[in-house]
Structures are given as C-alpha cells and as structure tokens.
Length: 165
Image 1 (cartoon, one colour):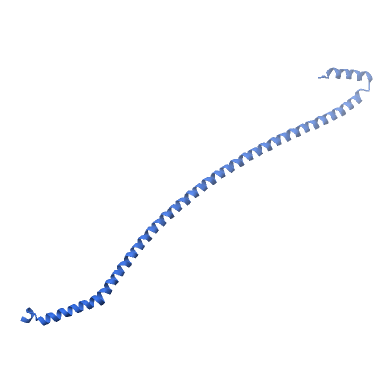
Image 2 (cartoon, rainbow, N blue to C red; image 1 turned 60 degrees about the horizontal axis):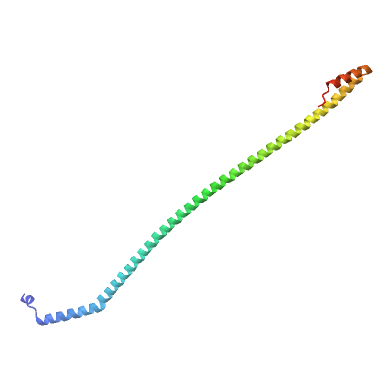
C-alpha cells in the first residue's frame, strides 16, 4: 500500500496530461456550447420578462383607459338623461300652456257663441211676443172697438201709459 502514498512520477505525468487533454476537449466541445446555451436561455428569459413587464404595463394602461371610457360614457349617459328630462319637462310645460290657451280660447269662443245664441233667442222671443201681441191686440181691438167712442177712450189710455224715452 505504499504505492498509494508515494505516487509514481510517470503516473502523475500521464494523469496530468490526460486531465489537461480532457479539460481542453470538454472546454472546446462541451462547456462552450453549454455556456452559450445557458447564456442564450438567460437572454431569452430576460427578454420574456421585459416583454411580460411591457405587456403588464400595457394591460394596466388599457384597464385605466377602459375605466376612463366607462366613466366618460356614464357621464355622457347621465348628461343625456338630464337633457332628455329637461326637454321632456319643457315640452310638457309648453304643451300644458298651449292646451290651457286653447282651452281658454275654446271657452271664450263658447261663451261668445252662447251669448250670441242667447241674443238671437231673445230677439226671436221678442219677435214672437210682438207677433202674438199684435195678433192678440188686433183680435181684442176687432172685438171690442167696434164702437168709435170706446176706441178713442182706449187710445187715450194707452197713450198716457206709453213712456217716450
């Protein structure tokens, strides 16, 4: 077991040479591509993280824009509803006043028509009364005034009662 504690110089030389060649071959063909692949993967992950961050920022910006658009739409809707209510109230008020004016005109027209018809009815009634009075008077006169003295007496009596304004 002594050979394990005292190395042989030839063995050390060949072991070192083999280790150097193996290290050179591994560096040339294994570590380079492995390190390049790791570096490429690191860059890809970095780009992906940056893209994700940009996407997250864009999503947040879009969410803010969407909320602003929703708020703006709500405000426009509220404004339109307010204007619509005001317009409705104005139209109703105008319609009420026009209806009131029309009703007043119709009432006034009806009053005038009633008054005119009343005057016509009164005139007709007066005509009928006058005609009937004349008929009655002519019948009375005819029957009672056959006597000339009685005729004079009645005429004088009626002339005294007549009021000449």
